[in-house]
Length: 366
Image (tube, rainbow, N blue to C red):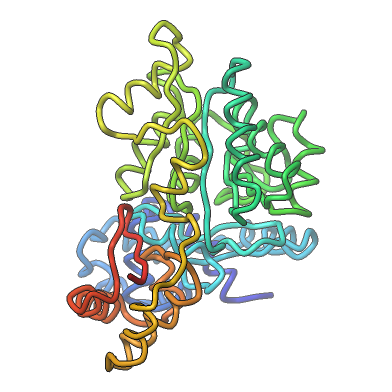
């Protein structure tokens, strides 16, 4: 039995301990097992934990559901991703309420260089279908990972279009990996595990209950570089995802629609309230994210030769030289530097005119 995993799963089951508290505790103790072995009075002294939560941790003794889940994980070759795992989606870590533990079945790096999430209504129009398919077709040469929620409508269209255009795609589920909802997407889900994957923070035997979908949406919003809303009512789940993405400092884009069309009411609202950038084609997304290819200038080559860099600055420049632009989340992950060291290096590089910051906490070499 994997003791680390046993305690990691257990941490997600302790009453009164949610993801925010779990992350805070892991930050202090380093691993899940140490949390369960900590003294009650030490736990009580931690800000936000207190007597009730400390008691919940110390009173947790039934590890049988955790043992059963480990058996399920091993049988179906599922990859558990605790927040300290290097394969955990690093972009998601910057969301204050990111899951402490994820369950993943697939073959694609969740820290892919470029990731977009596409969301929209379950009851799409033909316009929504065409817009989604055209967007992904135009992105086919960009080597982008497409994330959505495997629901009916725009989600399903996005996943299918990604597979058709040889782009990897991840479906984020509102239930355990022992089932597929909706059932009609079972074949699609199987194809996705071969060319992407399925991801959830719910254990097996968890039903797709209504309250699980907003929880699922925070993963869709948090693990991407940018999120695209295709069609949505003003009170749809896609609007919740877009609001979450804004809260996580992600770039949000929305396709506009007719003012008389209730399926586009949410998109038009986001654009009107400056909560989303208007998008009509893939080039809008590529330009906003600075993902269009650019030639290096002679000036940049001269700069590389003559400017003396500190060790941390050189690490950042070396990473930026490997791609056109990169998010702050990826810099943290790839550099293995502390957040303060990355911030200091970026500041100095910007002051020297070597690096430029772009919308969405993205950086590029000048």
